[in-house]
Length: 130
Image 1 (tube, rainbow, N blue to C red):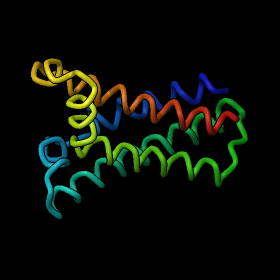
Image 2 (image 1 turned 135 degrees about the horizontal axis):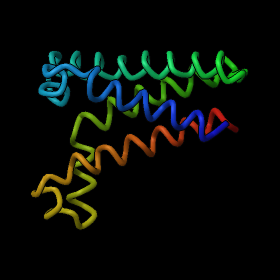
Image 3 (image 1 turned 90 degrees about the vertical axis):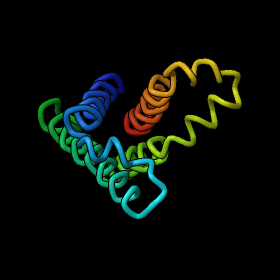
């Protein structure tokens, strides 16, 4: 069940991060303003909506019986971690403090960003499968 959940959450992440993210959200989600927070939280909510839809489909089609409260907790985790990672400063801080300044200067932040998102999704999948 873990692998199926993880794949559905990963597909949900890809759908929300690429075709589901507007140019406005991508440009402003890290801005330090009410406008930036609105773009950020709207984008995170898209992740929660898409992932919840895919988990509901998995629950129906694959015969799962995901309990409601843990599922809600996992979805809140996905939304909160996605929002935090997309503020960009955590990724920048990580790269500046772990010997990755050159990688950061050459476009590596997008890769570290995606790795952090995958780690959060795998955590959610492990939680739901436990």
